[in-house]
Amino acid sequence: MVTAPEGRAVKLGFTNGMVVQEIGWDEDTDDDLRIEIEDAIDAEMLDDDADDVMDAVVLWWRDDDGDLVDALMDAIGPLAEGGFIWVLSPKTGRDGYVDPSEIAEAAPTAGLTQTSVVNLGDWSGARLVTPKARAGKR
Image (cartoon, rainbow, N blue to C red; front, side, top):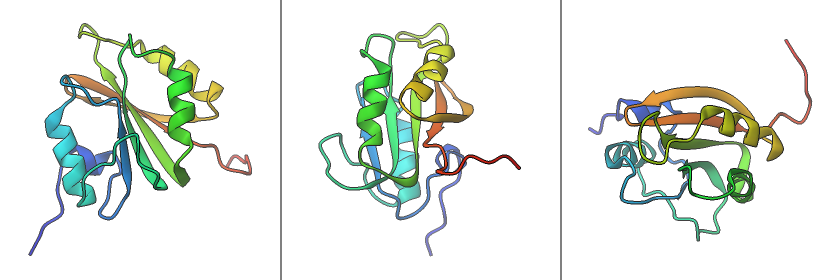
């Protein structure tokens, strides 16, 4: 019997059967988190050349990676309705640190809403979603 993986990937909303694209992988990414995500979805994450419709996108982002709005626009393209993007960036004081305000400002420009921020060890994560078609407050 296989038990569901515990830990960060499940808290981030990754579940069995999801199609997840990974963008921005490099030697500095958190390999343990990558493995946890792949265990949670029970598959390998797809690279940025994949043509599938994605349930989620993991975007590793560093200060010198370019224009975040452009990267988010590219990530939205294959995203399924109800899908989400995790922008993962190095924490304060680490090489490639991205100020959280940069992500918060880039999200609405790309048509996204930031819903949460999490601490992932050496990385921070910002969860971005596309706004609902009908804006209504409860």
